[in-house]
Image 1: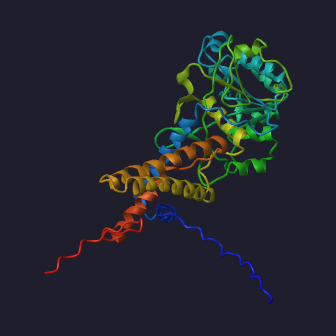
Image 2: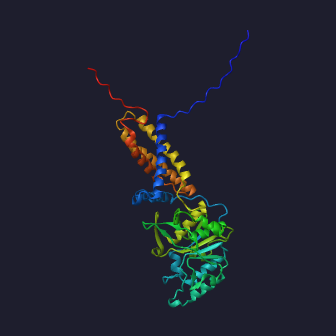
Image 3: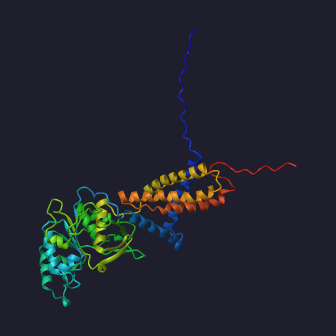
Length: 428
């Protein structure tokens, strides 16, 4: 008798089954994403009119919080091959020694500094000074003015200046190596500086953008394209610029940055090396402090520090710091909100299900956990990628979405899948 062995059958694929807490978190995550898309459309079309400021205003606050959080953190290293950035700081000691009298920094001493800088064969130098007119009234050039003018005619590297003329003369008439850049700083409605002006047709590039493009070897077309965008300006990532005394040493939070004083430069404390030769130099005055101070999200900063921060933002991230694009934003938000809500409902609908404080606890922690998850994700995104994650926008979308669902929630039905039933009426 022949026996037939039954063929083994492949078991059907097992379906992934989510727990009730995960399903509830997934539904509400989809609600957050949908509400964000609708809210963004409403804001872009201006359908809320003047009430849109209620939604847009917290965004600046959220981004400022991220800025302040990473301010004392070390930044990632700049792109490989980008030259060293050196700030020549005309601090209190330098000003008191080189130019103890007068509001205008001594032009003869400025000539000495430039001559010393040219020994390093810099890729470019930015002078954050108003040199458009002679230091004497009536257009009369002093001996220091004449010395500086002669030095400017002989510079061997590209020199970036904030005005179209120097000592009353057009830049091109003095030297073809002089180039104008924009040194203005944009202010928001609250009077704080967060932005670098984007390049406009026929207008000079921002000083930081021009320096970056020279260091990265980008042509004018690519450089201007880098600074374009829908906003009037491009956002900066700020980090503390550390200043050490002549007898102390330390590291900068921006890798690839060196800060020395004017006195130290003239005293030959900056060694000539393959790194310092061909560097990008910025020269700025920081004393007296009140002369060029600007309010920023991290406190009052000198103008030269703002230009430096903008340059190092570009050198580190290869772009200015925009708000995270919609594709990455929705992916990050969806993952983080789902995890946060799943954790919340595991606690409230699981561990605290029988507690009388369940509803109160859920309302208290579901938004808080999601906000903390999104905030720390925003910190990491800004730290390592240079983009801003508006972590309050998803929270606002969550609250508005839940508010919109209230009229449709119906009775005492819970999203965990359980319905509270009333006790049956007693039969007569």
